[in-house]
Amino acid sequence: MIFFSSNQFGRRDVRFSSSGGIGCLVFGVLGLVAAYFILKGLFYLLYWASPALFVLALIINWRAVTDTFRNWLKSMETNPLGGLLIAALAVLAFPLFALYLFVKALGYKKMQQFQREFGQGGQTTEGEFVEFEELESHPKTDLKTDQPLEPFVLPEKEPEKAKGKKHKAKDEQSDEPERPHAAEPKKPENPYDQLFD
Image 1 (cartoon, helix red, strand yellow):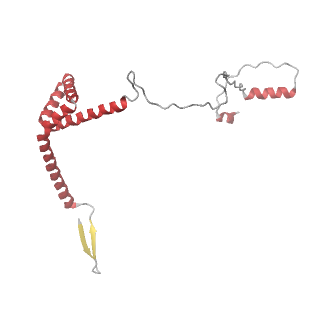
Image 2 (cartoon, rainbow, N blue to C red):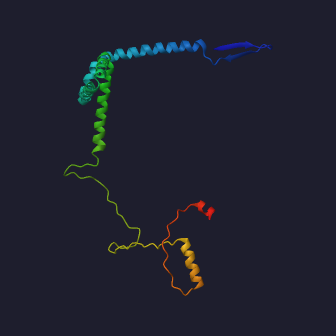
Image 3 (cartoon, rainbow, N blue to C red):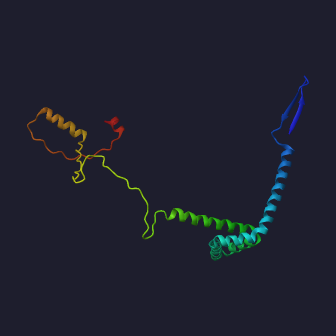
């Protein structure tokens, strides 16, 4: 909505209201009426085209129609009331149902084309060769292939306390032979343990 106002100096100010007012209501109603008539015209066209769409769905891929009928029979077995409701909607809105079958048949056809192109790419029939490029591979090391590889042996890690005792013993040069120590359980490495030592 537009408001005009004038001040004491004779200047006119134009202000726009953010609430919308009656103009938005009128445009909304006009939009709904236009959408109703457009959808009504499309439904009328679908009404006349629905037999052709149904026949085209059968021609393009008849399995789409049979699968839909089979699914309806399964729904009748599990939920008879729902199956009857679906059948009534299919009869009353046959143009939309025919369009649905046509689109489903087109989807089945595209899926079959996709499976033909990409699904059989790795499979070959007997006597058919697949083209591929053979790549040469060179080892990163200078070892010959006839030499056996020996596994690399890692040295055992001694606990820090045991290392300290051995170094002290070597420094003192005691005459006693070194006694084997009982294996101490490994403590988890926790940075907070140092605070309580």
